[in-house]
Image (cartoon, rainbow over all chains, first blue to last red; front, side):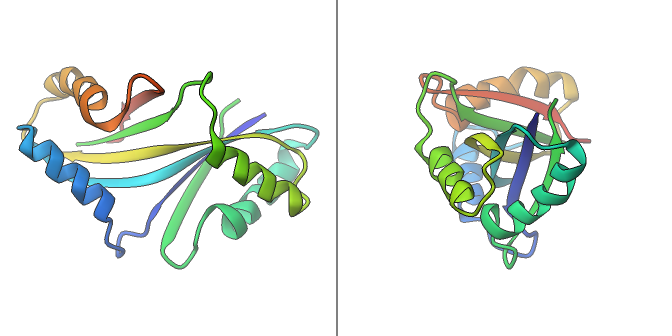
Length: 80
Length: 80
């Protein structure tokens, strides 16, 4: 069983990495790019746990380990 | 129009960040996590470009700017 977690800064938090990428794209002529936000993605491979349990535990893992809930938000879904 | 690009190391490339996260999860008791891979996610906001053009140009942007094609792979899709 595989799970994908997407972590990004909350909309109210400045994203300097994203801004740098956006600036780089503009200097290369891609000026139709109006905004860039950069985040992290985690792919977790689970074994020996039911889907129901995973559904409970993955949010705990996200809150405790994968994100900083003060400045980051996340979403997650099963891959298979 | 929004586009999401997922970038991760190729399967043959070591992922020390992912390994560190996996180790941290094990020490916290989440030992059903068999593997962790960490990557990057970019959300691009496009304006003034058709979907057809975007379909051509986004892979160029991924190859040139967002990834290092020697060690990284990517996938992308439209969000809206």
